[in-house]
Amino acid sequence: MYREELEVRLEHISEQIEEVKKKLDKMHHLRTCLDGDALLDTQDVADVLRITPRTVQRYVKTGKLKSKKIFGNRMFLNSEVLRFIKEVDYEK
Image (cartoon, rainbow, N blue to C red; front, side, top):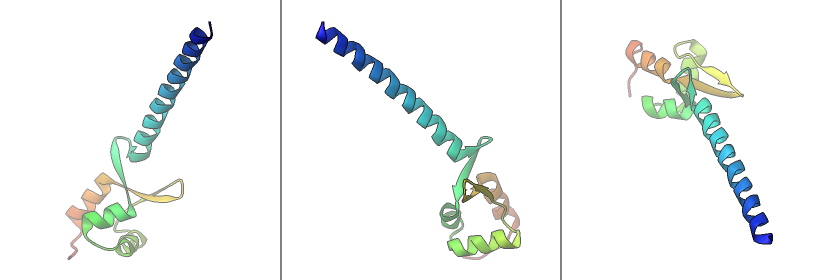
């Protein structure tokens, strides 16, 4: 009797863990994508462009590079970074 009850409880816990995993995966996907476009943070953009994060901030401030504030974090759409690369001449 005790063993059967324990197995039922463990199965229930296992199902709950799987639900949490699915929710976390969905949240991770939402965090890294916006309308199917990858999101990059300032350091990611700096690495791609081979510039400093401060230079990325300057491009944002001057309007050369567009970003979005998401939950207090400055994020860049991958498509916007590609547009920037195509349209803006920079050296480094």
